[in-house]
Length: 310
Image (cartoon, rainbow, N blue to C red; front, side):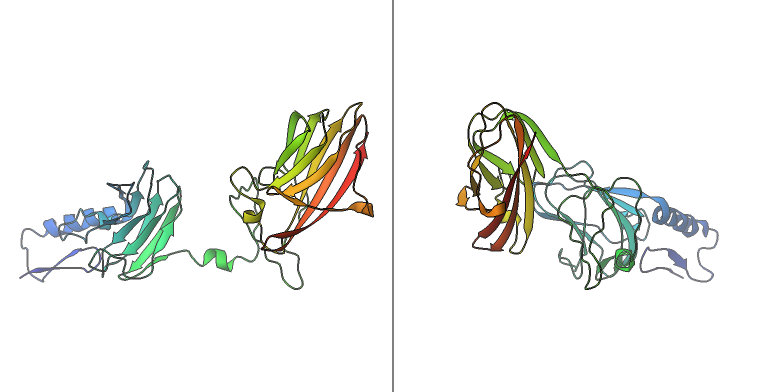
């Protein structure tokens, strides 16, 4: 009489009447496997994190103790990636696991199912760094076990501070606003600098730029993304950005006499139809620029105003 094994986690199923006097062997082994399934964490590391590679998790061994029989995979903990990595779970084996991406570096970790040749067979899932994801396999595809949660949320209330990295798009509808703010704070850069020459206004760094030292000359405002990104590269046609520059003047008044975007001259349309020809002594002159990108060529319409505060 023989022992057969279950398909997914290889639990032993002795035939009726077999293993007389030794029945404890498969029972204890099954208990060990189930203990792993419900509580064991195993580590998966990348032997060459600097090279794009595939790590294959083998099928369950009938004697137990195989990594695919564990509850959780700790993937690449402490490793810095210099290339995208793929982890493949066994083919034709259904299961559910928690994957934790412990890597760093600007590259991804993707989970798939081995097609038998070291290639993902079907659907794959990329897990974010520093996150744990509950995934399941149907033997061919990998899916998120909770991928319907965010899709089904119609109202979400958060307490505390929410930090979002990257771009967030909020879609309203034909009858609702996309965003309602009861209060908000904008980042301002306050610098003990005297305005003169060309002032690079980095849109990605602030909404307001305030020079607190008395200006020493007329100045050009150059609008850009930052030192590594152009304004053109961070905006699309039809998008609008409004920025503010605060210039401090002493007994001698200086003013903004030119505007450029990514180093190319533009002619603003000034409030009241007249461009400033002088600044205001012993004042803070507040310049506001609303930049509308009108084409990808690129082309812009800039609406500007200057207001004295003293």
